Length: 268
Image 1 (cartoon, rainbow, N blue to C red):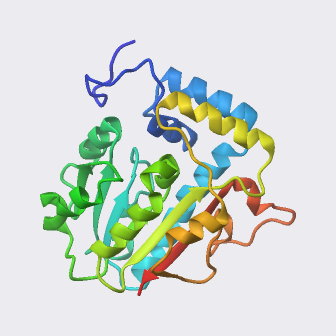
Image 2: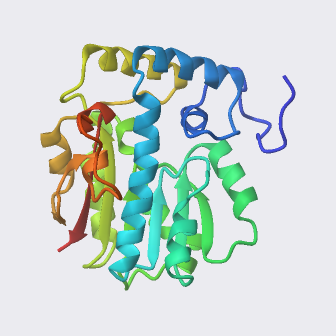
């Protein structure tokens, strides 16, 4: 197949990418047939998966608006993925043009396309780094130039830690991020969960291993442990659509069907 201009030369176009599968479910155009094929297989087993990804993006927008309302103007978005409409900088800068946003992702496709889209956009920078390497992220010259680590920063991990295996200590990653930012900083986090989920969700999780970025489902207790040292704000750790919804849930809607838990917290 022909390689589009936004796809780096060292990317294997015959292997599905987790970032591109996510882009497809969000209605984006930066994906290939191999990604759509895998997305179709996952959706056939878990019809709610697309709604879950869109609910995650909607949570991002609601959380960012709330954070700006709270006076936060600096954002560190780790695992940002391929940009789609309604990104962090768009939402934040619409509310306050002085907001500054650092996008961090390990995927070369996500990074390459992010840089192309954001070229010339003030108050933004894109960094290629592994979420597990917190020290490199916070020491990056581009990050340090854009963000003031003497003032509160909102750390967004809205769909990256469920790609981190237990052996790599996701709670430790969050703890190191907490240590890197000052008191009053915020943490917004989303992680998929196996609680309240049917067996087919577990089977779909196994398919994720084909992307090279398998998904790790976690319990509520495991996720609450990742907030150690942070104070969860109301309504706490809840299913995605229950976190300050813009509109009430429809009668009969089951928030647990979205399969992910979300929360926002303040550093003590």
